[in-house]
Amino acid sequence: MTTNADITIFNKRYIQEERTEKFVSTRIYGVSLYSKKGTSSGDNELKKSDTHTIRIPADADTEGKEYTDQLSYKAMDDATYPGYWTLQPGAIIEVLPCDPVIKRYINGDTVRQYLFAFGSREHYSQERLQNIQNSAFYERFSDWVENQNKSGNLPELPDGMEAQGIYVVSSGYLFGESKTSARYQIQLRLEYFKEA
Image (cartoon, rainbow, N blue to C red; front, side, top):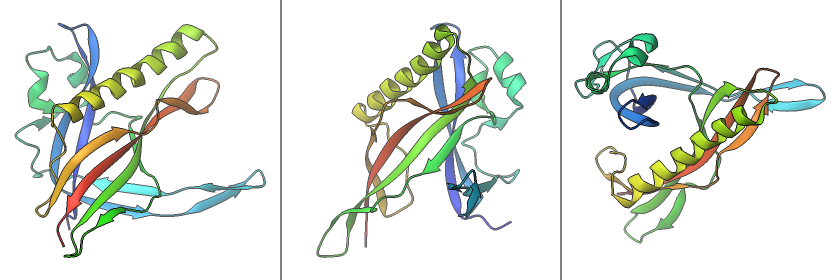
């Protein structure tokens, strides 16, 4: 398998000791990423139907963490889960169109940006409490991103590139809904320096 990317997976985890949900990151080096742009038509309108396929080799570098299924991960205690990662349905990373170059230096170095949306599909109903809980999760996630930025805990990028900041562009919002589920998302911007 040809590998062409590194990714970070964020697992949603309920921390029993703190009695709160957090995102736990796992950096995976050497995955195969394939993206295909497309559109579909229906109801007298065009809809974006881009697809992204990520294949993770069994021998990929996962920072020493082992893969486990999502139910086993959820059942782990607070002392055990840090050595594991999983794939959870509903988490989405979506690339947003933008001019990638913010600033260009005379020697060819650039300051760039990468806009993306992080989203999930959650249970949805007419009950306000459920919808408030879904929105509250994204409020906590926004606070977490801002705290990571302030503490300088930024993504590691390939040689010749250095993250300068990650910023919340929009608060979490309802993006689409059905009778039983809804997609919520939040937009973010990664700013980074790239050598010529």
